[in-house]
Amino acid sequence: MSNTLKNTAKGTIPFEIEFKNLIASQQKLFYSHATRSVSFRILQLKKLKQLIKNNEDQLHKAVYEDLKKSEFDNLTTEILPIYSEIDYALKNLKKWVKPKRVKTNLLNFPSKSYIVSEPLGTSLIISAWNFPYNLAFIPIVGSIAAGNTSILKPSEMAPATSAIMAQLINDNFPSDYLNVVQGGIPETTTLLKQRFDKIFFTGSPQVGKIVNQAAAPHLTNVTLELGGKNPAIFTRDCSLNMCVKRMVASKFLNAGQICITTDYVLVQKSIKEKFLAQVVSEIKKHNYNIDNGNFVQIINDKNFDRVRSLINTKNVYYGGNYSKETRFIEPTILTDIRIDDAVMQEEIFGPILPVIEYDTIDEAFAIIRKIEKPLSAYLFSNNKAIKKRFLNEISFGNGAINDCIMQFTNHNLPFGGVGNSGTGSYHGKFSFDCFSHQKAILSKSTWTEPNLKYYEHTDAKMKIIKKLF
Ligand code: NAD
Image 1 (tube, rainbow, N blue to C red):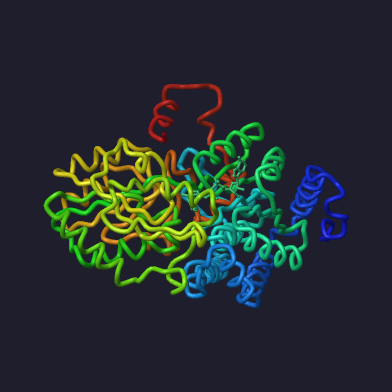
Image 2: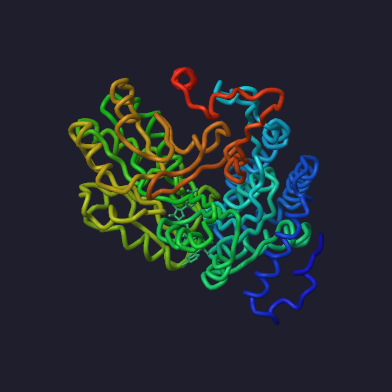
């Protein structure tokens, strides 16, 4: 392996040539088969974990610079989940890479069938800024575990975290194995013109479409982890205090800049007033404030202006204050919301909670169906029949009943969207599969060959063949 990029006079060659060289070097390494052995993959995963561990302080500082995220939030939502993914992969990798025997049909007697997971090749991972480490490193864990070489393009909107990830990875891993390319739209566009074996994208549906189009000429395997408008339904029989407590804590975490958080609430008319009072009481308990370390700033001025513009003062039930200087927007509840209001036309990705009331569950479901399929959906209810209907009748990527966002933390659940909120999934074994091809093998023995399929085609043979099928 070589560190070719580090030794070139960076900036003196156009980045397209730099990218081409980088990808060519990664492909060369991949086809040398050096990345395939399980021992190699285990070594890289351990090295990655140690690298993050040794530099936790620097990682904390950078995420504070970008988002004013506290050390507590950084550890619980970014760093610890990465360690957990690495540990899970280390524990299971030997099992995952083993060819998996499956049954063989009688028609193929005498033979064995099995599935071999093979690495795809060179992966491009494009990540978002809202959980900059989590959304970059967890896909990398999957790519390494599956035996690929990888290039990460973190979000330019979080420049400090992007820079620290580039520094740590590029100084410690050979560029032909794992490398970080920093940059915005021009760099990403140029990267996307190259041929990869896997593209793993986290971001908005709008850019997801660009990524899909760029992948099409090469028929590259693509995973799209996108966003959407996530509903949380509260039915009249829900355990109101507990449910509101959970929803509020997850909604305002990261100042609402979470792809799987509640985007809007549907509340049954008869409990609306109680619900609103409880939401306000929970918000007050949290004392949300950037200086307290329990709230973050909006990522940049552009997003601040966008989120703030979604607050229509005539709908403000609670909150509505903001400071442009600190990019702070107070947790804000909007009521009397109609489906055609501006706040319902796009993913909010900020600390605003529109509340829509409904009479019957059919009415609530009809509202959800009018909007593109969400990444997540939540139901707060103790009604068995409604729970069943929620699962059967509403399409969404992932979700929870009587909680929000915690499904993300279970390795045994695939994490991904559906339709407009994404395609494919990852986490745990699903990450390994996401970065692998499942090669299907039928291995025949040569000691005999039933002559059923050979000429002459008799009625007796056809009878047996029909049975075998
Ligand atoms: P984004 O789509 O603007 O950017 C994501 C990445 O794409 C960045 O690395 C960016 O540099 C790149 N990019 C932006 N415009 C591009 C273009 N025209 N051509 C090529 N590349 C381009 O998204 P964002 O603002 O970083 O993140 C917010 C969105 O991401 C929300 O929709 C949110 O729901 C979604 N998201 C999804 C998940 C998930 O796991 N499903 C996680 C976090 C965020």
